[in-house]
Amino acid sequence: MAALIGRRLRKGAVTTAVAAAAVAALSASQAPGVTTDDQGRQSAADTLPTPDESADDNASGDSFYYTDLPPLNSPSPAPGTGTAGPTPAAGSTEAGIPATVLDAYKKAEASLATSKPGCNLPWQLLAAIGKVESGQARGGRVSADGTTYSPILGPVLDGNGFANISDTDNGAYDGDSRYDRAVGPMQFIPSTWEWAGRDGNGDGRSDPNNVYDAALAAGNYLCRFGWDLSTTADLRKAILSYNNSTEYLHTVLSWLEYYRKGTHEIPDGTGTLPSHPSGGGTGTGTTPARPVTPEPEPSPPATPKPPSTPKPATPAPDPTPPGTGTTTPPPTPPGTMTPPVTPTESVHHLEAEGGTALSAMAGDTYAERIGTRAETATGRPVAKVRIRFTISGDTDATFEGGETVATIITDGTGVALAPALRAGEKTGTFKVSATLVGRSVTPVTYTATVTQRAADTLTRTTGTALTCVPGGSFTEQVEVKATYRGAVADEVAATATLVKAADDPTENDKGPYFKDADDKPVRTVSLKTDADGLLKLPKLYADDTAGTYLLRITTPGGATLTVELTVAEATESPSASPSPSPSASPSPSASPSPSTSPSPSESTGGA
Image (cartoon, rainbow, N blue to C red; front, side, top):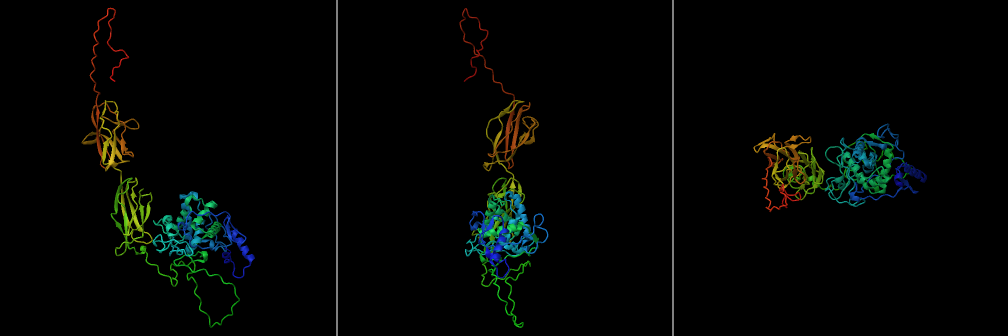
């Protein structure tokens, strides 16, 4: 760390007292909780937490980053949020953040404030990480939509000075099919981007080389696990999960504090480029940057040479001056091998595997799976490329698991089979598009239709005859079971109507009826089957008109059931003649009995 500070001091002999003063000044500008020991080394005030992820689960895979520290003089805070205002004083030019990059950070903060308000993510943290990871997208060399003019790639993660992460994306994101490399302004490794990637600029795709997408992805990544970044402990956990390095933590905290004290917007492409990579390694870019050359010690003035024999000027190490915004990549260093053509680059077009029109009932899983085949220009299949399936349209349909986006790797036949598609409750049509990840080819579009739930069979659950006396009510309520192709038909709409005749479905104006909420007669009701496919109709009543009537129940899908209802006077059973009492000899003293009715204690009914 002292070496890093030394690089910021004026050339020439540096005394121990001056170095100590620089260390003290720097430590005073650091974030809370960061201190220096008596040797000028930074240390955390509290014990640093251990991240939960291994290197290949981290955002950057513990890859390269820049160790440049903020200037000793903090920028003058601007009014309000500190993002616009007067130009900072000399010495604070690094407080400027390219306009598009700054806008991406602020939009990510606003999005997370809505989706994860408990995280309390400040945009200045994204700016600090963006500064350390890529120098704010190489000083803001991005297009109007936020995409870098050329890919920003970290070093090959082959275990040589960095983590050893074998290829996880077949080169789709980083162009390397042997090892992974961190990608984009926020330096995501492919395996992390695959699940953390977000669409931050609303173009329908997530691109690690787009600063809007990358900033929103970084925000969501930092806010996972329910961390509250307004607390010191969770803030450190989140930063360390991005890159598991104490020096990385301190560097990010330094820039976070610096940007919190004030910053301003500068034109894209004019940002200050960092120059000190971690470990003296390589910088990010389309090709590895050159190692940092130490500043030479001062030497006595050289004897001037005659004007007639000047030496040719030595070309600058980087011919591209900061701020030009050029899209021309630096020349490939001698000896650099041209990477082989990746499978993704060999894909010429995508083809639908099977039909492109699907249909299912609301709430059901589509019987047919969507498949897409990747092919070369000659029609040969391409294996191990990523196909992204995206559901769009006014629908609540999802893939199995509840997601609306799924990325699948093609198999040996070049086919990627999307997860099972499940229809929602909204009827109508929607689209599913299949696109190639990592390269632009014409997508394949599938149309899916959601039809209403249906039943093709209705049966009564009992066979009891339904009868009622005029002006009375039917004792039993009608109950039916609905099925569709032999399976339970749940949540199916049904209509029950008292019709005039078997060949006349017109609603009857007399006979049995239902009652509405106001106890008024109605002869048509709409219902829905339950989870078991059962439908229990409301209680039926009869008016004073005797006769035989028909109740008809119908459902979408063609199921129809007609039930007969009888309204008639109750049939009286013949009264039983009283059995004569056995003849008994009258007793002279017995009085004739006035009645032969049994006493109240006798039973009149059989057991």
